Length: 252
Image (cartoon, rainbow, N blue to C red; front, side, top):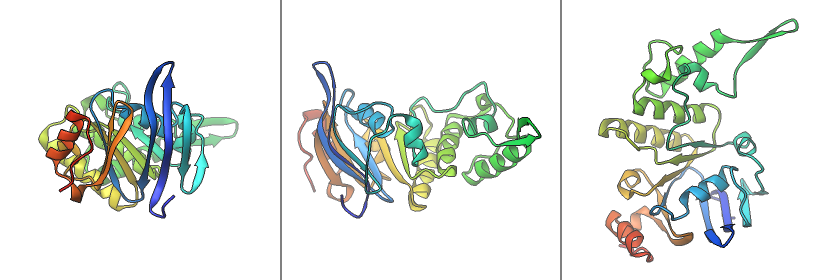
């Protein structure tokens, strides 16, 4: 495992009966890096992300995280080690408030003798400050998530992961259904958290969504790894050509 890597995936395979979703795929995820994980539908991107996040167990292969071999038995185990995921359909519940979403599963409590209650005042105060730091202006943290735009919801999902000490952030199609203006804001936030020390895996089938901010690309095709290339050595058009023809990417 190279000194730059926060995670190494070594010969990862996943089979569902006779169907091989991943076929001995190996690559590193480096520290302070935005890695674009690319491929068409059915390439194996989602399966790989679920393995990294502890949602599913690989059929074979080894995973190393921060220099140690790991086997995640649940998403909670991965999250407790600093690996978090923002799903394509977002990780927020529309019928709940911003603050309840922000602290979902991580609520702050206080005790009055034998009685345990939520520390709503501290949660509201800290949530409002954290949300404003990531560029989302809200009237009250008690407002419902349903009142927010798609970009604001995405920003809160990403900001929440960073606030709770995420070291490796997995983003599944983060620009889905966002306007151009909102997409730029989300990209700015991703760059900020990368620069603050978080590694990012950005999953998409559209290279133009990730190319402006990526440092490196790993391209999958029907469970195989086609290429692992630094952005400076490849154009978006070459990546698209590799995906559409199932061939190794042509470098500049």
